[in-house]
Every structure is written in C-alpha cells, then in structure tokens.
Amino acid sequence: MNAVKPNRLKKGDAVGVIAPASPPNQENLVRGITFLEDLGLKVKVGKHVSRINGYLAGSDQERLEDFHEMFADSDVKAIICACGGFGTGRIAEQIDYELIKRNPKIFWGYSDITFLHTAIRQQAEQVTFHGPMLASDIGKEDTHQMSKKGFMQLFEPSSFVYTEQISPLEVLVDGEARGEIVGGNLSLLVSTLGTDYEIDTKDKLLLIEDVNEEPRSVDRMLNQLYMAGKLKDASGILLGDFCDCTPQRNLTLSLEEVIAHYVQLAERPTMKGFMMGHCNPHIAIPLGVQASMNTYEKKLIVDSGIL
Image (cartoon, rainbow, N blue to C red; front, side, top):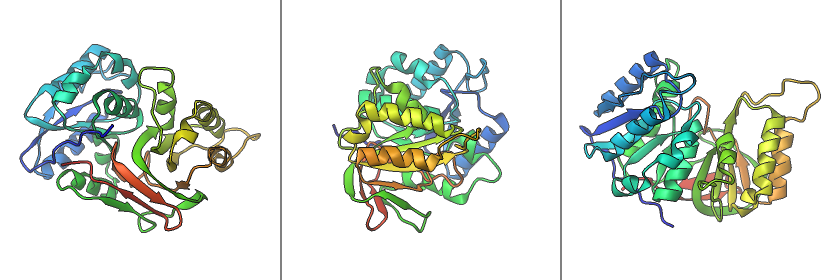
C-alpha cells in the first residue's frame, strides 16, 4: 500500500481546526490560531471546539461532526488538531473513510490523535502528520522555534534529515532499515490491538513515544506489542520522547532497562533520542511515507509528506 500524499499548502489557503479528543485550553488555542494566520493561512474553527463534556471536547457525535465537516469542505486544505488527551478511539468506527479517500488533505496532530493516524492510514490509505498541536504546544508562550518551523514542510515538498545536529541520538541495536514510518503514542498503539484498526508494522519503521507512564506501565505495553509480533515485524524502531516516564516507587526497573529489554528481544535496528512526542522542541514528520534509518551514521531520512 502506498499512502496518498495530500497537496501542499499555499498562502491564502483555509485550514480547519478541530478537537477530536479533549477540550483545548482556549487561550493557548487563540495563540495557536494566530500562528497559523501569521503563516498566511485562513482558519476555520470547528463548531464544537469549545465544548466540554468531562474529558472530551463535546459528545462523540459532535466531535465526529467537526471531523467530517472539515474533510467534506473543499475550501479546507488541511486539518490541524487543537490538542490530544482522550477519546479519539471512540469515534474511529463511525468515521466515513470513503469521505477521506475522496478528499485527501493534510491531517496533523499527535498523542491521542495516534489512533486516528493509524485508522486513516490503514482505512483511507492517506499520509498524515505527527506534529505539535495548537493549544497543547504552539500556543504556549515557551514553544521552541523548531516546533513552529515544522509546519513549513506543508508548503514545499522536500525530504527531511534527522541527525545529531537536532538532538543527541543513542544506538540501541545497530543496523540499517527502510520502510514506511508508522506509530506514535505507545498507549494508543496498544489500544488498537485486537480491533479493526490494529497497527500494521510489517516491514515498517515504528515510531514510539509516550508521556506520564511509569516504567512498569511502559514494560506492560511494550510486552504486549512484542507478544503481538509488532516489534519483530518492524524493519526498525525509532524511540521518541518519553516525557515524565519516571518511577514513583523504590522497587523498580529504570525506563532505560525496560526499553533495552524489548528492543534486544526484537533484534531490529533501533535508535533513541528523537525529539518527537511530548517535548519542546517537537520535530514534526509525516507518517505513511518512506524513510530510511542508518545507525552507523546516526541518521534518519524521511520522504516528503506532500505533493
């Protein structure tokens, strides 16, 4: 399967903003929208983005409605998620994937949005973008310029090269690997197992990141991915940021020990240290495109995600 790449953005294009998971911080969201406008884009905000339903941004039907309306709107060339949180898996079965196939466009987010990345790629065969979001990242006053710079990849097709000029990289298993980049948040990847949206890692580069999970929880989730064959199926493994994944008890394994255990079992080329995930800066990349990793050169090369 070759995922369809969306068309590039041009100044003056309209982009849609939705909250398919949790309610966004509205002040941060306003600043994030201003950022998009400063890029020369027009912004359409989903009708229900300000709704609060517990830890959800409105009911499932309201969040789904905003999602569908943005994909159906021919004026909207990209859909940027306001934030992650919880709940995207609740709407996956109700999504009209044929609508997405008929209207390929940029879809951008991370964290809980991982479920939608996986579903859209595998059900609608479309490239999506794993990158910082408006309220949870871009709208914060301390957001790193590199996080903002990532949006420029939406305007001009070009490959992206990640080296230690961006951040220190550590080799856990030597080797070279190539394939589509897939993955995202570990918790959400595990939640796809046994569903119609189960992550396909066969001959792919698997990106994994997470936040606020103790080593014992990371251990449990990596073990499930390993037993499901997802680590061994992958051509290589990219370890992003594991923010605040620190033990809260004395008797524990370290996060480093847990990760080393599973990548050694998987025996796939693996590097860690990629600033992808709940970090600042957060380096954005497309998912569903071809990429190559070389641990000897400590280099990741990612194809363009747009046409």
